[in-house]
Image (cartoon, rainbow, N blue to C red; front, side, top):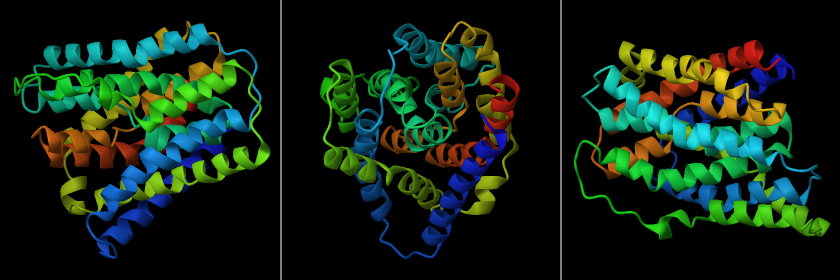
Length: 304
């Protein structure tokens, strides 16, 4: 694994984000365009990206125990750690939002593209399995977190979990489990549609950031401290637990997922559940910028 390749990949992603930011500032599109594009990526291109992980690749036996252990650390233990952090540091203002932002890294919009670029198409299936747990958690524990301070009545909706991303992940597992051969025209179709995910995802992040003033986004010391913690310090704290993962690819995926910036869904949930939307956008923006530095550092010290 070359640290230079990782830096170049992150730089390319950052350039795509900057393009979205500039175009957003130029007001070339209607303000609903970003929302529609987000739905297109989540419901169309990303599911095809997940499917392409099994339609165009050949796999050895899945390291299922390692994947399940990584899923436990990232999906179950991480929200518990987030709650403990809020209590230990006596964070009262925007406590719900801070818990959410610690618990949900940007697996979909940045995790899939970056992991694909580092480990290849085959690693997407591992990531998709872990992401199933994140999706289930997002629509259950995530909603509970956002209502933690407001004391709203919590409603769990199983229907919300059945998303195109979940369906495509389960279908990918089915194809893998039964060694189903996909005809090349269909496999190429899945790959071509899936390959749209990376540039569109980064473009959406830039468009979202362009809705706010750059000075307001950049000059907030407390947000930088929080982002350094979730981008760099928290992954280091988890490294002793990751050492129990035998498969090096799964170990790398787990570390990279945890090192991802805050998920875009933090802004969406903040708006939906009447939390501090500007803080959510600001944290997404800064953590995304810092990830260009922190992810290569973590990979260099712990994976190479």
